[in-house]
Length: 313
Image 1 (cartoon, rainbow, N blue to C red):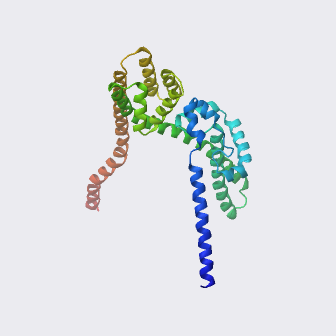
Image 2: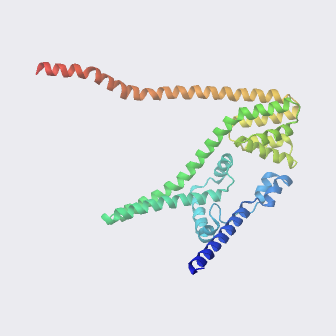
Image 3: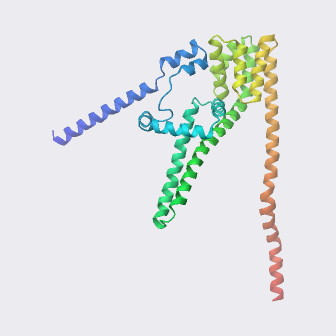
């Protein structure tokens, strides 16, 4: 057997062993920890989340966080001092369904700003090769790009909130009808909630799963739905949670309440669709008036004008 074959076999064995080690490590990292599986069932969900250890690297990979983490954290603290509004940011993070802290978002804002700064610096460098006298304007452009990146991440968070709330509104009628059917079939509100959470998938189902986890830790059903009404940013979900809490406390028919709320949401969606269609109809008039009609007039009158011109000549 030649040395090349032996060397190739050895290299293949080393590469295969390395891939097996990497796969085992990735599988171990992706496996949920025991504390994450047990804590939601033995204490309140908010307390469990507060007791979860904070990752020092935040949204960064562990290696990058270990090397550049202190510098990025100081930069994130500076962004927090300049922008402020930590309570509003935390509120939007909750409404967006993101399991992150305000500090994690500030670190992401710094990373977005650095990315925009690098793009602007690269453009300034390429431009400076042909015109070396524009160093100060290039520096100002880089600083403006950094500020743009920081603000763009904040704007994207607001967009994430809107997208999630739009999905919740779309899911609400079906989830409410499922709850109403389960309650009308004779199940208790908690059992009906458990059945719906297990058989549905979506943003509203995630919120109801949080409510179910709070109920299982000992919180009253009405209090859990009151917390849902307090942390949501949608009036219809707040009315839904408040209606369930009142129906449970006062003993009113819960199925009728859920059917009525689902019908109200469908009617509101129908009205919104009609309003959007009306706005789109007005917007579609602009190309017709300013583009299609002038072209039509030109095609109608140009042959006559050309004929008159030829007749005169």
